[in-house]
Length: 115
Image 1 (tube, helix red, strand yellow):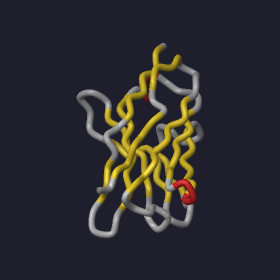
Image 2 (tube, one colour):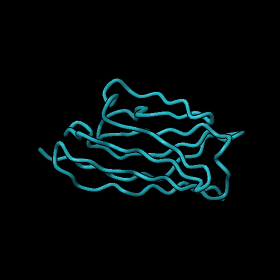
Image 3 (spheres, one colour):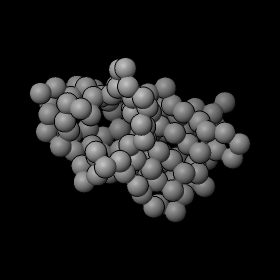
C-alpha cells in the first residue's frame, strides 16, 4: 500500500519558520513529480509548491520567496521549508505524488501561525 506521511506541522508565531517532511513508502518517488498543497478551513485546496522529477520547482505567488520545496530521492522524501510565516499560511498541508496511474495523497499535517 502506498503511503505518504507528512510531519513537521505545529504552532508557530508569525515570522517564524517550519520545515515539513513527506516520506513515501510503497512507491519509489524518484521518477515522480511531487507537490505540496494546503487547505484552510472553509477554503478550497490550493497548490503551494511543485517539484518535477528533474528538480524544477514552481510556487504559488503567495509563498514565492518564503517557501522552498526540495526532494531527497535517496530518502524517498520531499520537504517544504517555510520561512517568514504569516497567519494566512494557517492550513493543513498535504503531500502529493504523481504516480503512474493515479495521484497519491498524504493525510496532512496542520500548520497554525499565530499573530
